Image (cartoon, rainbow, N blue to C red; front, side, top):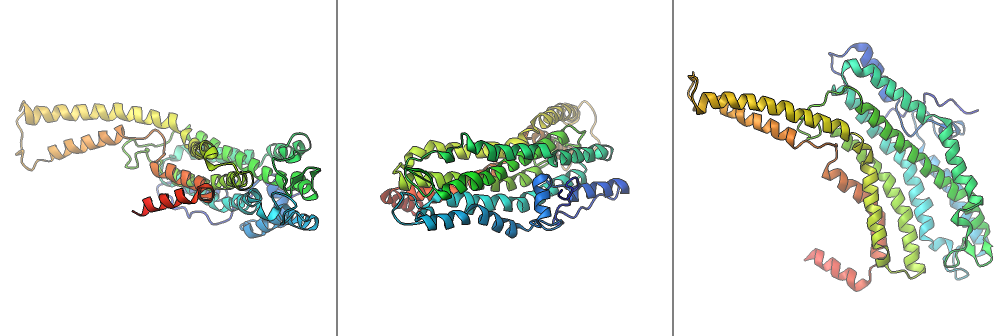
Length: 417
C-alpha cells in the first residue's frame, strides 16, 4: 500500500494570499488552506507510487531525481542493448540509435519537459485560484461552494480508476496493435528485416508505454483544470463588464493558462523528432509536412485556449447585461444633459465653461465603450502568440534542417535587409 493521496500537500511555493480585511476570518483561513493544498499534478496512484519510493516528497517535487530515473528506464537500456548488438552507430542499420531524432525528441526532451511542467503549471494555477477569492470575484456568500468545488475536483484528481485505465491503455494494447511492433520504412536500431531487436522489445514493452502513460495522465489533469474553471463559472461571481482588462476581471486566467504551453512544447518535440527522421533518413521533403506543421500549431493553440472557452457562456451573459444596464444609464444621463445644455428646458445654475457635465458625459461614453469592447473569453492576442510560439519552438531546427541552403540564406538575407 502506498501513502494516501486523498489530501496531498502541494509544494509550498505558491502565492502568499492577502485577503481583504472585510472577509470573515474563518472563510479566509479555509480558503487559504484550500488554495495552498490545491494541485492538479499531485495525487492519484502514480503519486502514491512516487511517494513510496521517495521519488517525490511532500513540499518538494524532486524533479531532477524523477527525470534521471525515467531517462535511466527509457533511454539508457536502449543505448546499452544497441551497443551490444552494434546498432547504436555505424552502418548496420539505416537509423542507428545515436542518430535517431525521434528518440531524442521523446525521451531526452519531451519526457523531462512533461515532468518539469508540474513545477511550472501548478504555481500558476494556485495564483489563479487565490485571485478568485482575493479579488472578491468569489463573494463571501459563495466561498463555501467554491471550497466544495475544489474538494470535489481534488477527489476526481485522486481517483484511482482513471490512472488504472491509462496504465492499461499505455501497456496492454502494445501486444496487439501498437505500431512499435511493425517494421518501419527503413531499417533502424528498433526494427530490422528479421523483426524487433532486443532494444526494440524494450522500447515497445517499457519505454514507449511509460511516455504514453505520462501523456495520458497530463491529458486527464488538463481535463480536471477545464472542469474546475467550468464549475467556478457557474457560481454567482462578481464580474464587472467595465473592468479595464476587457474580460470582466478574469484576464488573470490568461496569465495562468500560458504555462500550459510547456505541454505543447513537449508534444512538439515528439512531432519534430519524427519529421526530422523522415527528412534525413527517408528523403521526404519538408514541403510534404507544411500542412501537418501548420495543423499541429493551430491544434495546439485551440487546445491551449479550450479551458478558457468554457467561460464564454458566463462572460457572454455578463456582457449582454452590461450593455443593457449601461445603455439604460447612458440614455438617462444623455437625456438630462440634452435637457440642461442643449435645449435649455431647465435653468442651468453654473456656466457651461468648466462644467463637469461634459466630462461626465465623456466618461459615460468610455464606460459604455468598455462594455461594448469586452471579450467573451479571457483570451488575448498575447496568449495566442505565447501558445503558438511554445508549440513551434521544437519545430524550428527541423524547418532549418529541411530547408535547402540557398533558400535558407535568401530568407536570412531578407530578414536582415
